[in-house]
Image 1 (tube, helix red, strand yellow):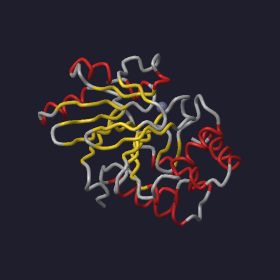
Image 2 (tube, rainbow, N blue to C red):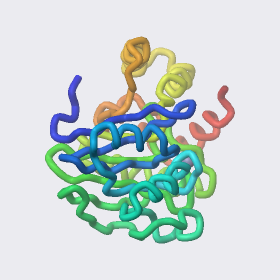
Image 3 (spheres, rainbow, N blue to C red):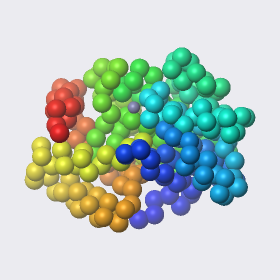
Image 4 (tube, rainbow, N blue to C red):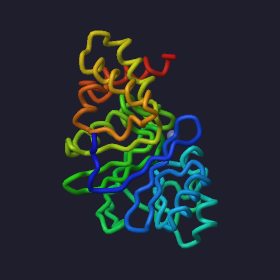
Length: 246
Ligand SMILES: [Zn+2]
């Protein structure tokens, strides 16, 4: 299935389950949440491209770990991060706020604050006929981020915000957690045909050594129990249940 004919976005699998996304246009590259630097530098050098910008969704080390070395290699790179995170993402040079619109690689990119996983987590939304969302650790296929700093209400509201985006939004998250999430969901809803179908699809992709992300918002709303939660109480039950599930 080819979702993304309009743009060239490449996923680099690193660490145990992180995915670094590279958005490439002509010879320019924008990297999202570089947990490490080596594979990013290798990819860009091999192609004779250059790094234009680094987008940071939040401050966790498995999202910013490679940033310092990338700045050393490309000193003029833009590092775009939440203005609330000047201490924890100190190398930012473009500080952004909720609702702000930037021009990156010739496209309109809107900053959407999605609190819950951390106190300042942001997502990057590329508006167009084929919209794209870089969502970091707020939403995963079949799951959502753990609530480390925010409240259940904040995370629930963040998911509601994501749900209000166009249904054909293609979502790029930062971890390949899909299989574990789907197994958890099936444990709670063993007869759910949409989730069963998703499991088959995920098994097939993983057996071919393919990523299960990105995913379409429309399809995700059918299989993700957190997006299906009808109210805060149901969401809270699910999040607490998932935290205890191994
Ligand atoms: Zn995180």
